[in-house]
Length: 93
Image: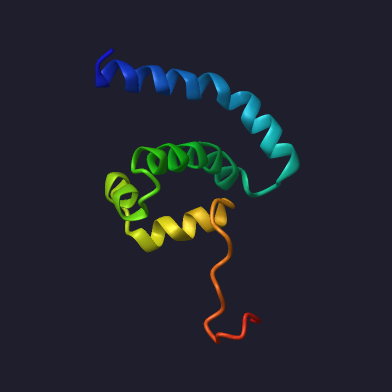
């Protein structure tokens, strides 16, 4: 399967899953549908790219075309990294 065929197959899978996903997310998290759907795609994408890069966040960020700090922020938001330590050094915000 070439890249164009793969992209088409991916799009077909997403389109077929969207009605159920919108129904599920739209009924439980009003006003946050976009974020909920994007997280469903983003989470497995980030996991896969991190696995491909052997856990190296800089390499993963380069593959994704984003800044490493942006990757780290997304990993935290999605629960793949612990919260960042506070800047005051006391461990309390």
